[in-house]
Length: 157
Image (cartoon, rainbow, N blue to C red; front, side, top):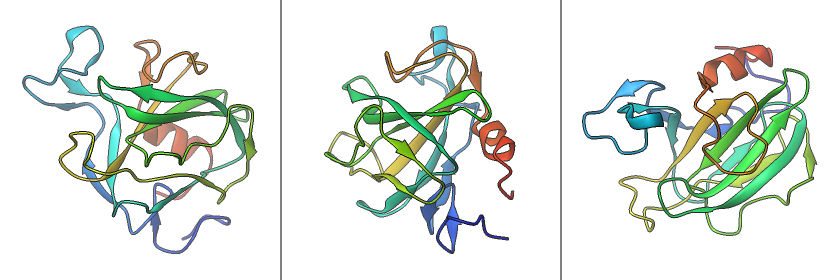
């Protein structure tokens, strides 16, 4: 079953995307967990560099930036219908929408980035949370499994 505004063969808004690293995956030595936790607090979907990343529902861009410590180029979106935010990291340079821009399901948010920032494979990293409003890509440590956002928007598993 395909969501209405998403292209065919889309996984997490990425055409032909593949899950590479699951949410909360324990990774010994992982430096980017919250408060020293060595768990992957997001979901990594790989695809070729430049692949479009499509919006899962309606909302607004609430933050963008660059974080040399892990997220690299990032964009953060807010879904008012479920009162949640989601940050996407590792984006292609220049692919961010401006803060304040609204979007509908199927609109292009950004493009998958490259390995140029020291990543091992081109992918988008999704991290969901409550209460983070664009101040930083990481925000509070009350992470939410991205599947909660996906299913709350009524998208098929």
